[in-house]
Length: 419
Image 1 (cartoon, rainbow, N blue to C red):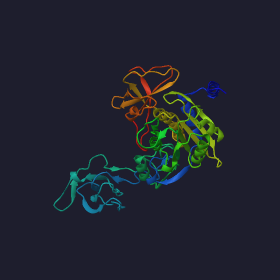
Image 2 (tube, rainbow, N blue to C red; image 1 turned 90 degrees about the vertical axis):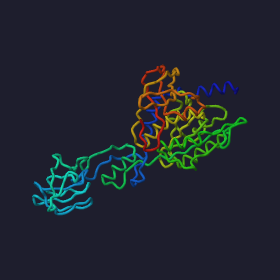
Image 3 (cartoon, helix red, strand yellow; image 1 turned 135 degrees about the horizontal axis):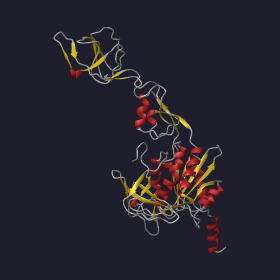
Image 4 (cartoon, helix red, strand yellow; image 1 turned 90 degrees about the horizontal axis):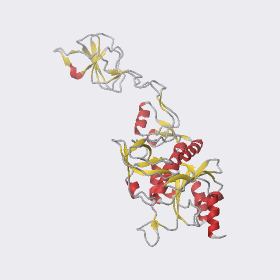
């Protein structure tokens, strides 16, 4: 078969690309269908996980009437005889006699029978040691259930766990949380032309994705161990099949870099066929980032694994991460489909015809504007290093200055809140 005939055959075998928004929805749905199991974790080990069940409070919050100031818990009209002290952590005796008071600390339980709390700075003492002053009309304590009632749902399942949530859970009386097991990810780097140390030269380029992609995956909440990063894998079909099989033995998601085309040394598609994978998405109509893919395999244990084929060009690979890997991981973690914020384009951004254009931008959060960056070629990383995300220019349109467009944020560290 001639080279031209082989190329034509390979091109005919490639299905038409899925629309970018359709691909995101499809990938999220298969991830959610394969959501990872729930596990119990001590509170200190839950940061970056996802709630597998709603967070409810075990008691009223607060659980008892709590003084909000340092002062005097009084009963009846003053002046008041001092009969004791109440500190936080103690259960006080009731106040049963008018004209009596106990000194009380902020956070301490208000004694039964208290009619008011007098602030310490607004009180004085008589020559015989009694307390005088005028309590404020508004009670100076927090009532039981003021923040939440026992059994009330505070946050739904699917909420990412961050330090604020951990603190809330502790205040509710929880010692551990039911969370989704974090996805375990692996990375296979394909390409004999890649160097793993030193500067590029003599026809070989430095591998930029092997060090970077695991860090991106961790920001999406994945576990990636050093032993889970393998490569460069030799440019042969047996080497690709063996590397994929080995990675899939332990990982929920295997990302690969390069080999997503149908060239003479692109072995990803034949390797996936040899392993019995089926495509969830095979090419997406997005630029940069073409071609990318997501495939699904069922293990012998019945658990579903995924392979995300990222292009070899570095920026294109990150486009594939935000386009396919991010919604997949949201589904696997039981989180809602990531909603895209909007920003106003500060400058025009060209369209890409029938393809969605993901354009690198820097965000001015105060002004709500997105500023296009330079150095944004598929093989470039300079623009990415200064970016906050990608402006979405839909097919058949151009991004005019002043237009409101969706923005795909770059991932943050687990628990960080985006704009």
